[in-house]
Length: 305
Figure 1 (tube, helix red, strand yellow):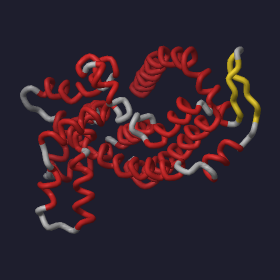
Figure 2: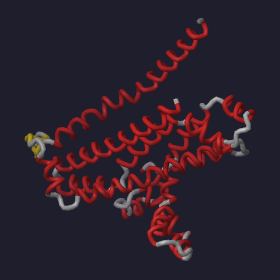
Figure 3: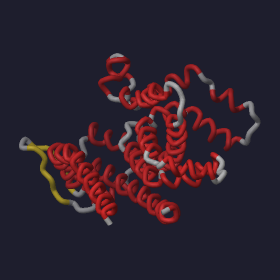
Figure 4: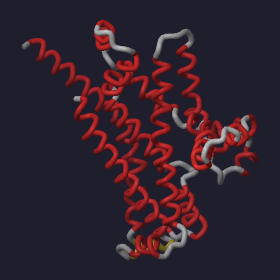
């Protein structure tokens, strides 16, 4: 009985400490993000005009959404392209970051250095650092490409000819094109897995080592340990990485829907249609992610628990 009370007190303290760590984010969200988010949501259902006193809104209900889905010549194509790209990248990022995380969590000399090495892209991907190391003139000429893709594809295309490497293998054309797509994009994928790798390492370090010791006594192989211990114990971390990756992709600079919405916003200054494009894409993306999380919980997490 005393042991259970002590365990509950530890859990309560950890929960309280976790809430305390969210306070800076909550303050920042309330001060800097809540108003713009609410304003963009209002714009999505309004006709917005710019006046000397600011923005004037005239409620049009679903007219902006009706336009982007039924009259806009490109939005649906951009939306489908974004969803296809998201569906193809997400599993690769998950598997790649998990694989690298397992390697970096193993015992070897210099693992701290390599952990920092894989996290460097997260730091370098900030606009200030890229501007500094690349030069303003280079960045201005590549603003429309997307900062992450610019850096990674430059090295990939310059030093490795993936087309010549795979086209000579005699594989079916569809499989070859799929492999070439991933191979040409491998640097971008690695560039985008820094945070996911850190999350997986944190999840791996939270797994009790006693489980692996018992499995060794029982004669389990490393392959069996991975699927029977590591993956089930990483269930909640996988959900976290999945949601983080989905949000990161949705706000990426090379996302087709984001590019079109910013073009409408900056070039034509039609704020209502641009907001409707972004909110519709956000709702559809979150619905897809929600369905994936629900299925993962229903058929994986619930069984593992």
